[in-house]
Image (tube, rainbow, N blue to C red):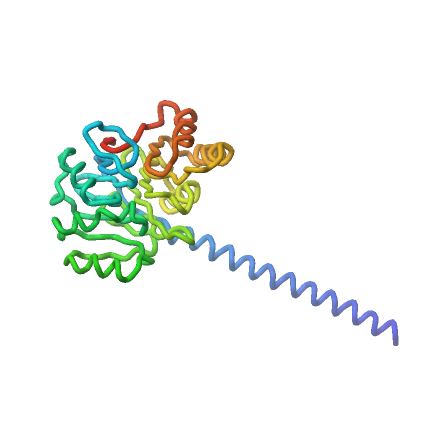
Length: 285
């Protein structure tokens, strides 16, 4: 009798182990399938902007001696005739002065994209909207309601962004990335590859590039903007450079919050594929 009970216990244990393994396999298979489906459904078809011109009208790094420098960042993009102002620097006076010197008319701006809520990126917005309210403004959905209502008060169209979104032919936003500080970056697909424009890259440069390449199945031709590496160690910067190169990033143009050490290290690592960026820098693709 004891042997029979012992035998039944062994059989029961085997059945439990087999059932548990089967359930684990089913759960894993379902998770894997959902993960693969997620990757496919998130792929963006943003088209190509055949001619792209990027100009930096606001930055704390000098380039064009005629222009004023101030802490912050803004980039004006003409993508096959569609004009986009990405971020607005820290104040309207400096932004408008530099735009005037660069012959960038406020009235020609069609779209404004704000990367994140920090004042050195949204500070010049009211100066633009007071002169041109016929614009569409794209902001992360996490922006404060008071800020979004202020934009609406100018009579312009506000678009709240949560996920990756196509803005126009050849141009898209990454959607909100990051945790503590939500931030979106701009993607411009050119004949030479993708251009990523970052505000401060709070979510991390590598994370942004990985996300973009997953979204588009395309390698990055140029990474430009704030790299958020002030205060980073040589070891940290070196690791980021290595990872970006492994991801296929071809050219870099760090400015704003990138820091002198990082700019020097990127210059050494990328050589001729390093672009010295600052206020007034223009890049045509």
